Picture 1: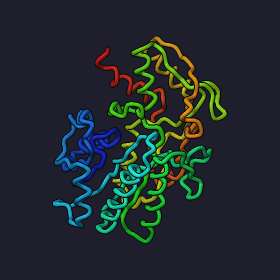
Picture 2 (picture 1 turned 180 degrees about the horizontal axis):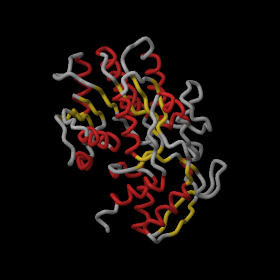
Picture 3 (picture 1 turned 180 degrees about the vertical axis):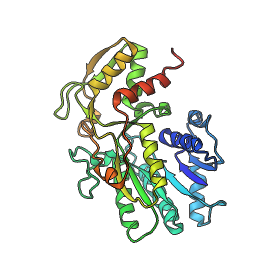
Length: 317
């Protein structure tokens, strides 16, 4: 059995689908379906069982074993709203649950592959998986950073695989429920369909209008790295997951405008509530992942966006 927390979410559901493609159906999905629309992400997936996050919490506190042997745990579940300032809620969801699950895995030598985030780097221009250079800008980033630090300490001296994957700006199928937290590819596509224009922030963080740069990585590549870790139980540690190349928001907008064959760019004032809390630049340093043995290439933004836009607009064609 494979456990996927956050399995009805964006990356989690794509991971379940990829496991199905490998012939794996003995999958336990753990999630919170308070937002019932997320069920759509699982509607074409084959799973063995579904647990609410509350069920998992009770189970982990009981110190019992799962009814079936667990091959691996993919811990993708978290509150990913970077604008949520409820620190108590964020730490409960992203830190305490993660600690409980990690200890369950460590005690039973179960591989634990979990989702971290590039948000731990804050405004740093260094993106290496080194302790001491992280500087999160919000409580979401702090919750991820704190668990990375905790996992670093706990995995010392253990034979169990523990892998933290620091996702950069992921885009692709299954993110529609994230609304304001969905990728800019999703947001810009929606803006073009509704109003025929893409709205970009004016200059900030030393970058010109629409010149802020992020490392945009397709969800298929993120899933591929997760599965590679499953296939290589000797690999352990924290790794960046991105293309290694930053692209500007202007570039993203032009790719979408070219795909649709219409639209224009409009620049709007940088939001006051994001002042001092915004990553204007991210670019994954993926040397550690390469040194660990991952050799697959990453989709460039042009190809990845075309692939996603074809799926996203299939009903509008």
